[in-house]
Length: 294
Ligand code: PEP
Image (cartoon, rainbow, N blue to C red; front, top):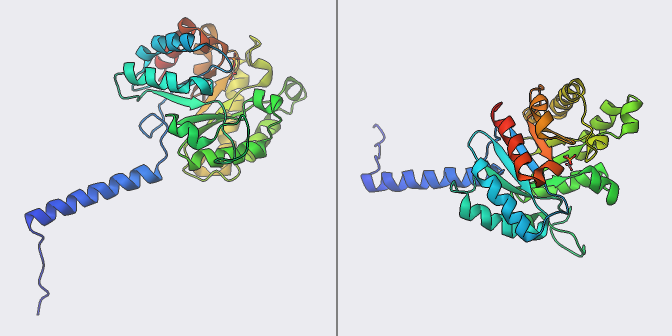
């Protein structure tokens, strides 16, 4: 006897479809970390590292100027000091007009622990709760000022990812390293050690920032940038084939005058901008340069 085929009635079928949609949405939300760009990487990312600068009023004015630059084909990330994150978030929410897509928020650091007795530090879940989708980790100023090692950066990255934050991990050689021909090795070690424990498929980015170019007005030459970004791409791929498409940003005195040339280099997926991100005209000009190449 043939088994009876039970066809769900219309109501049952509708409930079944809704349940499947809910399940797909749940799996999507819980397995794919968000980066503020609709869970995909924009073709170019321009990030502004405000460091320890700006009053609340200045932060609002700068955010107001940047909001119209949001667009689908470009990722913009603002990294304000943590005390200004709420203000910038509220301002973005009120004026962005596209639900926050296109301009993401990040913290400038987060701790390797999720909570605990760490006076003055900030934890990844706190940043996430405040509306951040990114966090800068291992900036050379933190490596220098706070003695951060790549192992510490890796522990922070793992914790950040566990709380649905995409880390932007900074690497870069000193002038001494470059002059003595060790730049490639130094950056490779920083990459490998800073990514220990970061699982394939995690959402993160790398910022290559030669220390001697940060805040000095000196920029690495186009050939050096292309060579180092190619090197970083191959190291990432050798760590795990899944890391091959991770965005690699350049940072170090990026200005309107040199941005176009930098963005034309292979494997440059955007810029981490310090000083020029504090000046609306300069930051917007860098964004325009990137957008024309996105
Ligand atoms: C930075 O701090 O990440 C940076 C690149 O700074 P600047 O653009 O001022 O060199």
